[in-house]
Amino acid sequence: MLVKKKPGRPKKSFRECLKEDLKLIGIWNTDSRTNAPELCANRREWRKMIHKGAKTFQQDWEKARLERSQVRKALPPHRNEKLRIKTILI
Image 1 (cartoon, rainbow, N blue to C red):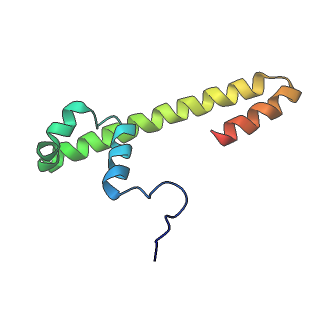
Image 2 (spheres, rainbow, N blue to C red):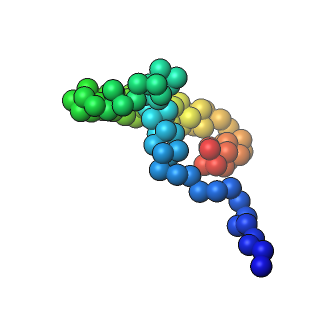
Image 3 (tube, one colour):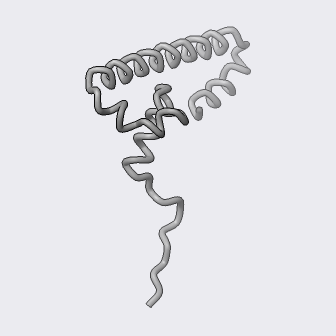
């Protein structure tokens, strides 16, 4: 009996999701990959890094959202709808 593969790509592991999130907030890079245990060992410093990275990410995200909104408002109405659809998909 042959086992068929499910369609699509395999599900992400917890480690892959964590790595992706740390990249988004600017903590994961080539240096932190080698000394990750040391970074996590000091809980106080680790929490500071997480909070700082999350705050920076949130500010950047909000700034980009406002810029997209201003661009959308500046366009003529007939072009505005096409851009609105694109930004929803992003």
